[in-house]
Figure 1 (spheres, helix red, strand yellow):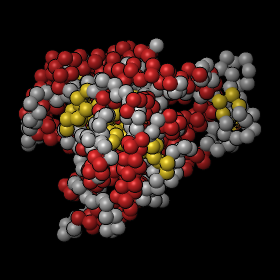
Figure 2 (cartoon, helix red, strand yellow):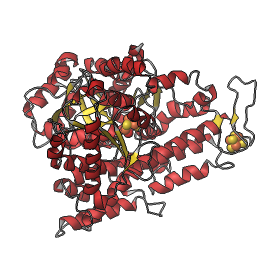
Figure 3 (cartoon, helix red, strand yellow):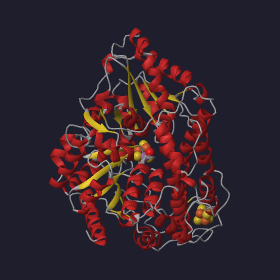
Length: 635
Ligand code: BF8
Ligand code: SF4
């Protein structure tokens, strides 16, 4: 039974325990929810006004229009672009938060933060076209922050957002401008989508979807700025050896799980925990304080500081069922409300920190940047107090822990390649793609979803693509899956990579001083860090003088779930990348919208969605697309 839920060995240990103790998990609730609403699955249910809810009969016998006259195409298009708006809002709100913090640092108002990567700050300033001559670090940081915040404020429709305009290839910018799809203001894009989907507004499915694409490109803008400014404040990832899965919890330590997305909180918790080791020991924790990560906060601190990753999305409840987590500290996004109920079955403190993200039953410690260290001390103190209440009899830490070599942002990848050719670091990668040693590149992203066996599609697809010499990149819960299943190791490269891929990864890894190959899957970071993969792709495209839709590059979200994933998938398509989705998107009630996103998009943008639920077949389809792109380039 457990096998159908998850291939994670932690689930095999902990789900029977949960059952015995009468603790319901996400999989129990999924089961109780069956059968799920067919109208919702097709996207043809409308709740946009109180004349509704309305739903379109997919078999053609019942209503074909809602009470206001909206048909299936309008309803599906409105629903899906509202998801994009929410995803864009989530990512870019995170980005704004980081940008405001950077401004605070520049103004000397945030003593608990600093600029950790001066080189990156200068590189970002240059990229944004700022003149930094003679300016000190804080002035530059202030200017970068203000230009970034301008992407939320600009009212000139003809001036695209600065981040996107300074990131993409010229050709891509022209193509998107030609479709009137370049965003000028992130907030305005979210507002426009909500406005145009209000009852009695835009009813043209194509027009709605183009608006959604524009919104998704605003999401891309927000992700770029979130990633890059976080690197400036907290450091740019470099290869680090760490570990993943629930075996990273320690019986003799105060275990604090940092969960959510925004590094502003988790970074300070990590800093403060180091200073509070002695207090933890005095409370009886011989192993001191052990910080572990969950979801994208986990990925953020993993790629920057080598903090071990305990769980990806579907495993967050399992972390609590170990009985070993003393505090789970959360900020925003992808936190199941169920964690407070499960935490209450144990001694675990569930601590919310953001005033606009509370969970009933959790302890709320309001987090403010000016008092970040003090707030973090409060949080760690709560964890130490909880440790004192921990019942050792109930602790079950699964024997599941894999090594993970992580931290491959664009800079780290270029750095590793530079060991082979310092003058022209991209050349070894381009040569390997041209001669076929690397057949193509696949970016794995996105969530877990109870509709598929947890982590299974990621692992199946990655193994098949690697065997066929495809270079693999990963972010988000996809990266978490690979880390937990041992695919971010040098051993995995030796075991699963095709011969020519293995040779390239070995040459680069050895020259870069890793004492062996690069790992099979390169961990680029959290979901906002998908922008790192685009940075690499743009560099390659610019070096070749081609656009992104000509590269043998594909993306896949085999277990997609969230509105953020819908936004990311849509900008991926808009950037020209064929994008696989392994869960059924809620759009199929409109053949017109489905065709637009899976076929017409190819003509308009070069990228398009591919829906394939079977991971083995999905890998085959991605290989075929990679080969088609190779033929287009004449290689
Ligand atoms: O931003 S992959 S389940 S944790 S949405 Fe959420 Fe999906 Fe995980 Fe990170 Ni991304
Ligand atoms: Fe029904 Fe139209 Fe209202 Fe939607 S907007 S709920 S289709 S009446």
